Length: 107
Image (cartoon, rainbow, N blue to C red):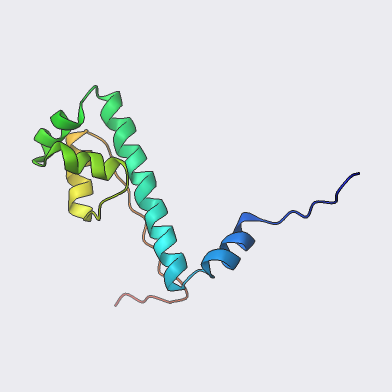
């Protein structure tokens, strides 16, 4: 017996489970996802440089545990800490800021 499977997009599933973009639950999810991606980038860059978490922590001025938390996305982190970590890794960082649904005028 063959069953007809219904497919749906990931965006529709996220909207149903987490709420639409802009709702508190969805915003938290998107923020945490970005932290996970940053953690992965830190870990890959650290390994590419041949550094241990302890060595990177020493370069940044934090304990190994803080580097571990950053890499695993389990820590709230400031932009300045992220910049210090990537600076210690001699890695370039780009941030993109978008202002949605607004017109900006510069005098």
